[in-house]
Amino acid sequence: MLRSENPRSQTHARDTQKIRLLVLDIDGTIAGKSNQLNQPIVDAVAAVQAQGVAVAIATGRMYRAALRFHQALNLQLPLIAYQGAWIQDPATHQRSWHTPVTPSQALDLLAYLEQADLRHRLSVHFYIDDDLYVREMTPDTEAYVQRSGIAPIAVGDLRSVLDRSPTKVLALSADIALMQMVLADLQAITNPQDLHITTSVATFVEATHPHATKGHAVQRLAEDLNLQPEQVMAIGDNCNDLEMIQYAGLGIAMGDAPEIVKASATWVAPTVEADGAAVAIQKFLLQ
Image 1 (cartoon, one colour):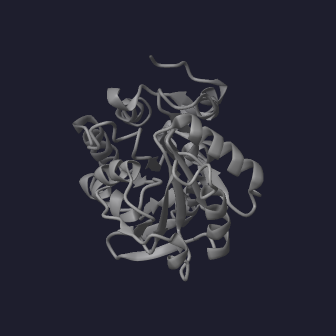
Image 2 (cartoon, rainbow, N blue to C red; image 1 turned 45 degrees about the vertical axis):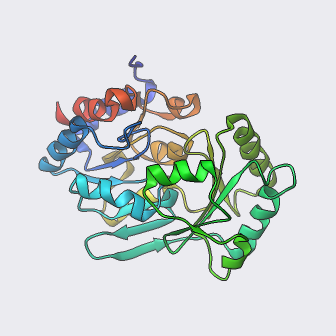
């Protein structure tokens, strides 16, 4: 069901013709259970690009795992990956932004995630140079691999790869209650000025550089295009999208987003399975 616009929408509804940049999350926003793009979103993106609106992806996925969506939508802007820690132009292969966590921060995270009561309940992923390193293959990692299409590198002890800085550290488990506890613990013991701890789906907890948020990345992209926040529309479905929804003059939350995300949005769209992103694009940019 659609939700009525909150007061913020009354300020921006009359200014939607000023939108020059549309930023889209992938999972839960333009790709649902099928892990594919439905035709309505492909058509909607093509239509807004034909009108001169630039379109970009901002995702928590690896750059390589997000690239096929960028290509399928025929996007021309750089791709924002790893929650904003990595910005790269697929056309030139130039990476313009990279803010990894330090090896010492990764060690501190590992110390928590490998506590005796957690080690065998969590899968831990390190992302280094756009490769995925894991301790071992687990059912949760297998499910991740099936969706991402990325072959992981099993190294046993993740400390062995910390001669380089991870772009992102991910803990995952199908046990949602466990992941809620891990998220709360890490947010409680971590200084936000040192690490950004967030979640993109209920089974993930992700740690990145404090400036590695989609909000920071979208702001960088907008400023590179000489745009103001009120000229930006962003659509997302989870807590890792919160900063870009708050930054954008027109922030759209998907219908099954957490309440904290919906409360910050200009408008709440239908769910991803109902092609809610396409509905939002039609409502605000194509009418």
